[in-house]
Image (cartoon, rainbow, N blue to C red; front, side):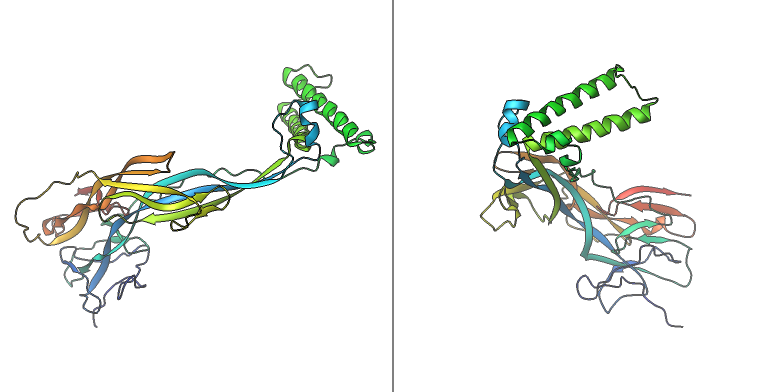
Length: 358
């Protein structure tokens, strides 16, 4: 029966394919060679990752609608600076920066299958990046911090208006009556929280329901004076792949009027990224030697990353970057019939997270 080659399915470049999430087979991890499309040896193809810096922008599109009683806001509720004109603008809520790993097609290798071999397990990501040998990787993608979005539900204040309010002979009279009701609601809330109300609820649940209802009424009435602000949250992602130091490269542009823009759109203010190699990898001044046979892995370097505008710094920190590091080898002696070596790799950097053996 002819031997087969286990390779990823989708070509990232010519002949490179995506591997299933978990590839489990019997292998001899000693024979590893560079993968060449159409010239692969029988075995499992894996990739080492390269680093991309992902800049995720959370932006809000803000729409302000003035209240129908806005001209009475300062007189009855002491609200200052109330606008009578609708407006729409964008704001940056947050910028999240993290390192991600993507398959490096220049670092694709084949682990050869043999007839006489030790039963082993190789685990790969969906993109074919090596995760573990002879064990299972506990690594799970880190979740982004919770993105806060505004509750866009708006309550119609007319649901709470009395007949006297609805039948008011003028807008000014309606404003006076609604303002009085707002102060009555606030007084009722204070009485409930202090336990001084004439009809106190029997338990905490009932108290919460009453306070929530009063809060909803107060908010609906107040927005008739202050106006209503609606926020629509959107997320934009930009990936930067450093090959060397980057100094103030434009990632995207931001305009309060137009929102998030492409980096070549001069209608917005530039947002810059700088990535600086910290040179944590040792420098080898000797003549390069041929590396021994075995499992090839990454030793990532460290980079200082900054994301900023002309007047604000959004992020500053250190990250591991594979391109600023080196590759090394887990030699054949760790993977023979006498030794059962278990290795867990970091699928973002390709470095070793844990190694042990029986």
